[in-house]
Length: 498
Image (tube, rainbow, N blue to C red; front, side, top):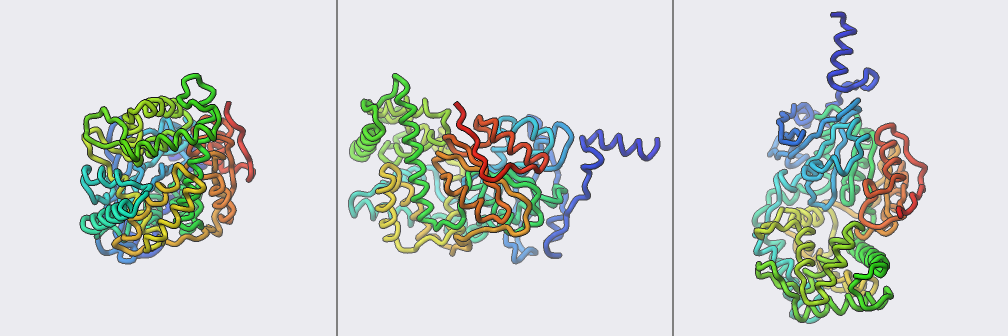
């Protein structure tokens, strides 16, 4: 058989066009890192068309010949004419990229899955990648149950002591990992994966915190960017406690949108039909749960106090499709039963029916505390909570006090709250949703303006993140960019889906 025919047959077998074949770029940034970039992944079948493997990376990038850790990786091969690999991250921090990739057929378009191997990975410290583990399920139940809207000095003391205990438990059980779970190290891991997978440039879709991971990658490796979509953007320049306040306001905005939608349904459980009146009713419900816990029919002994109830309200605000569930749960809560709110809180925390937790809560705290220079004085959190409660009366206290363990964290923060510019990178698409509860639209504007090649794509919608949420406008713009590198015009605002 002629050489040309052999080449054509090989390309057909791999789904690659001749003009798309690229020499793998496994060149490491430094010679000491070359063994990591040159490693070969041993893929094995792990069900439903997926393949799994583990990649080795250094625990400490400043000492690459030292201890190694494993990064859990999963792949769904491209179904058509392959361009390369698409790495995806669901956010958190603490969300499992392996679990997220398992849902690739629903979170990515068929067009994108045709052209890319979908690659999910658990960032270091998360899931199956050397996870940070600190507390038992029972201890985490007790931590979550702390009154995060303290009304008395005794409740403040209890919150401080509980936060100290959380930090101390992580220091006792995960001291080796804690200094090295920050986003900058995870971004370096992504570049190892890029090289090992044979891509000359990174193609990436990051949502929520995943946008921060992507932006840090671009700032560290601007010449290794092919296409980055940062959906539900985090503004890296906003100080940590100010970020908490802004996020609390975002949940308040989403709550108002939920109420306006609720009033259109005859089963809406609020007696008032004004946003202001319904806001007051919800505030009264949460205050009641603080004083007299709601009924729990799960039989697990947990007391559904204000903290659990707030988590139960927050969770369905992330997706407009979950609003009917929130409406029903609030109807039950107004009648004294908080079980449905508790179930939704468990979804947020990834708490299992047997009382165990994934390591999402612990890794979230560990990554945040090493990424941001949080204040060490608890008084700063009290002052921040007072201000946040004015702007976001239902959520301000909870979001602000939730970071208190970082005041006692056993290792110093390595990150800084600063602008990321990624000078020299090709266009990077930043997506923001106008009424996003967790990552307000202003953060997308901020990140897009900071990145030297940032392109802002907006969506006039509700819920957390935009791609795959039902907007054909957003989906087409993202797909065209990922596949053909055709970025939308910056400032494009996709219309609300009705």
